[in-house]
Every structure is written in structure tokens, then in C-alpha cells.
Image 1 (cartoon, rainbow, N blue to C red):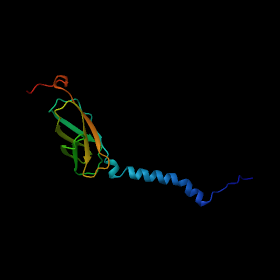
Image 2 (spheres, rainbow, N blue to C red):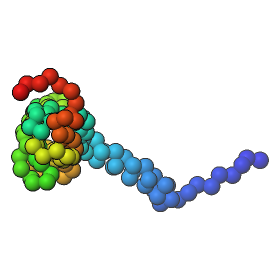
Image 3 (cartoon, helix red, strand yellow):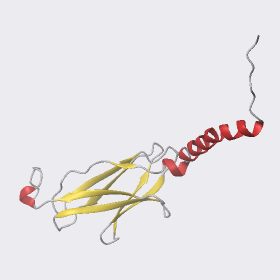
Image 4 (cartoon, rainbow, N blue to C red):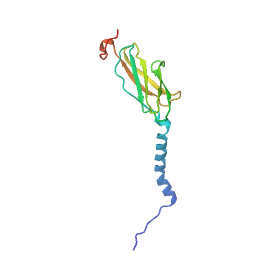
Length: 137
């Protein structure tokens, strides 16, 4: 005697495959250029007021060619700097730290219509508490 098998109707099989189709769609969306555009910012060491600061980001997608990035101060919206994301998804910009001590946030936008800008805090400390660097004054 052979064991009997019960076959599910085609509509049941289609419903069972639905989670796989949804997962595949999510993966496709995650691997598009817009999803890859969400990058990371490198941490920034404390800086003296008015000092030059290097701001860098990575993971902004691998779309090839240069793409513009704009850095603005979160508190005022004033332009802090501009740079270009290279073909490897990396950028570096040099900006000047604010004069007022305290935490200052920079918002980094890729292009004009970035749906998910990145934010990084720049700790500006009073001169006597700043990390030791050779005096240039």
C-alpha cells in the first residue's frame, strides 16, 4: 500500500509563495541606487573654535562617477561646505568649526532631493580643553 499524497490547489501554492515574492521585492528595492545612497559619517574628534575640520562619509553607493554632497549647519541651515562623492561612495570635505563651543550638528545631503540626509555632531571645545595640537597662533 502506497501512502497517499494530497496536493494543494494552485491558489494555495501561490499564497504560500507570496512571502518569497515580497522578500524578493524588498531586496530589489534595498539594492537600488536610492537605498545605497544612505551613507555613514566618520566620527569627528573635538575641535577648537575656528579650526579646520575634515568631514568624511562612506557607503554612499557605488553608482560610478562623482555626485555632489552638501553640508549644512543643522541649527541655521547655513552652508558649511560642499564635496563630491566618488565612484566608491566616499567623500571628504574640509570645513571650519563654529566659534561657539558646544555640540554642532552637520546635515549631509546627497544632491538636491536627498530623502534620507545624514547627520553628524561636531564637538567644539574651548581652547584650553581641545585636543593637544601644535600651536599656530
